[in-house]
Amino acid sequence: MTDPPRPQAFRADGITAPLRHATFRRIWLASLLSNLGILIQGVGAAWAMTQMTPSADKVALVQTALMLPVMLIAMPAGAIADMHDRRVVALTALAIALTGASALTTLTWLGLVTPNLLLALCFVVGTGMALMGPAWQSSVSEQVPPEALPSAVALNGISYNIARSLGPAIGGFVVAAAGPVAAFALNALLYLPLIAALFLWDRIAEPSRLPREKLNRAIISGVRYIANSPSIKIVLIRSLTTGVIGGAIIALMPLVTRDLLHGGARTYGIMLGAFGLGAVIGALNIAKVRNRLSGEAAIRACTLSMGGAIAVVALSHEPVLTAAALVLAGAAWMMAWALFNISVQLSAPRWVTGRALATYQAAGTGGVAVGSSGWGYLTDAAGVDIALLISAALMLASSLIGLWRRMPRISSQGKEAEMLAYPEVRLALTERSGPLVVEIEYHVKQENARAFHSVMQEIQLSRQRNGAYGWSIARDIANPELWTERYHCPTWLDYLRQRNRPTQAERALDRQATNFHIGPEPVRVRRMLERPFGSVRWRDDTPDRGSADVLPVISSAAGGST
Image 1 (cartoon, rainbow, N blue to C red):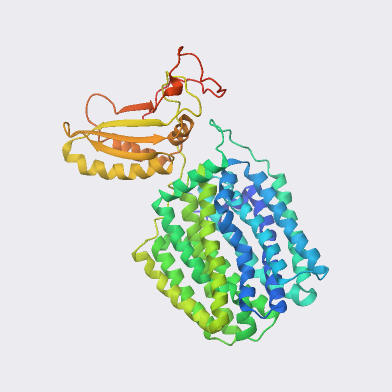
Image 2 (cartoon, one colour):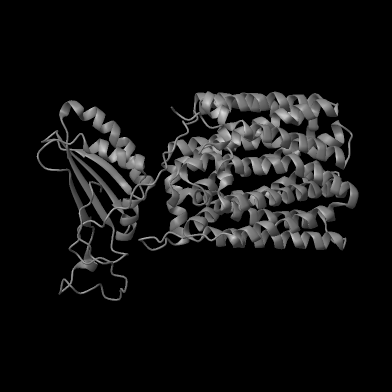
């Protein structure tokens, strides 16, 4: 007799499963408070700007100041998260944000804040959170088991949107009761629980077999990975588009309250609370959406729903109707961003997760930041209702992007493969020895040539996103069954990294290519040092002069990989 199925909440991949892990639970609860503080500060900053200046573009620039840092420092932040202890990076980022929030509180209390100074300090807070984002999100996989990762990603979205549901309303009441300075002070205080939770995290760092990359090389590696990952590029295009167009509803919310609903700070908080409530509803239904709809169908439904909701907000002058439309807009907004986030996080391997997430965040929040500025200028020229109607029309039209760039199927393609042993080496090499040329010879039946060539096109992207360059595939004109794959790595150390970065899916792709090989001998792999002047010596056992980082020579089978 079999046990009855467990409720979704108690399954290993259920939405609440990650909360059974103490580290994740502490950080998640503390991040909920931190998110509340950020949104309370956002309400205070937007309303303070509304009181200091009638200019719509200045009000919209508050969102730009908070989100622009994500776009500007995304890749360095992601590289730092991948290179260093993510716990330490997160604590440093929180210290920066706390400094900015404390300064904003003090200057506002002293009556010294100006519109430009307000924007500058919002930028400082945004910089801290931009550095925090990749380290925090990429560390989730270290806090929960793999089967709970999608639920943990969704819970992080729920955390933010529970805060979005409550934070603006709380912010509205705080601002109405004690002014923007109280909102700024409360934000500074709510950073402290997250700092404490991170201090309590006894993170176990996995030692790397290879030296850490330098920052500039890590950034280049991240750019190369994303540039050669079609699925991630599609997500970036779609998230950028959604951010630019949909950011209007967030950036112009103070003006919707003031000009269309003729309300005050309390009404503004309620409207943002309605948007956040919808976002929580959307987050709680992510699993159902993923099970019933493909990624493209889900994103299309989100954009169509959000476009209709924005149109209602533009035309409505009734708070109840506007709030109802904002609930729908919030649900669609949250679902779209959660689907984007899950797609990136499950597709990227751990070595580049921080950089992939940072680029995704840059595309989304950068789109909101740039779009907010544009929507502010358009509102100055045409009015808030016209700007929102244009946003609604563009959002509805954006669903057609799927005809050109269809959302990839969400799956765990980024699962790491086992580390390989060093290949056989008889030449003394240093980390900097290079360039290295790799040639792989396959013997393939002529009737399988087309299928083999198609697989090799996918292998090209795999090699290039993991660090190879100058990739080519050639066919011997005298022996049509002989194919030679060739690529370069800048140094021996870069080659060792490239060789051990492929995911399980990419290793399976290598095996698929190898299965085309015929003949009694295995696939032949040559690894050659190009222009080896530094390796030519009077005595073979003499290290390169002036180099102290000669790598150990380990003779071992290559494990069937290059």
